[in-house]
Image 1 (cartoon, rainbow, N blue to C red):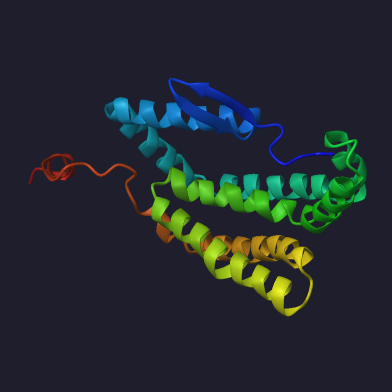
Image 2 (cartoon, helix red, strand yellow):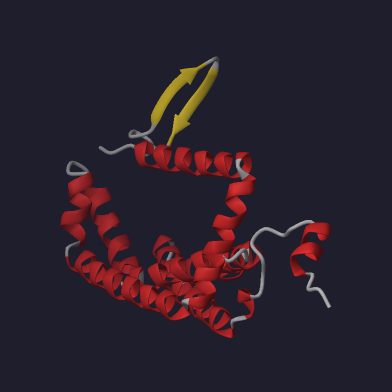
Length: 212
């Protein structure tokens, strides 16, 4: 039978026990770490790059919306396929665990039809981050988890008697509600008026000075 954590990477390096959740998680974490280190090490080069990203985002909103729409359609199709073939997909990963296949198939079917809104949400919150509005992205993440998903999961699991299934149902509900919040906030356009990396006051004064 399948045991949770059996695919983890467990090792010991320099006297430190390491337990990593699979190869994909390890690679993605290392890439993020390298990105952060390079950004901090080369702040002078990072500033024009990020401000250029912000400029592109704020001047090409139609493309951002189009990308979000395309991702929504593409992942919605993936969701439909996942819904229809949930059991074969789960069986591919855990072929010798009937109980896990049964439970996993139900989870995939419940969450699959919200794949599209998750993709659109990621694109638009990515636009917030790219334009320097990381506080907005953080606020949306906090609202989605602490004000939507956890309370909804608790109500469905405890008050409706659905148990674990109620927790899973909370995922697509939260995803749809969060996507609506993101679209409304994005449509307001107030996030466009922000510099990604604030220049020191003397530099800002020089850059905005106009003779006469």
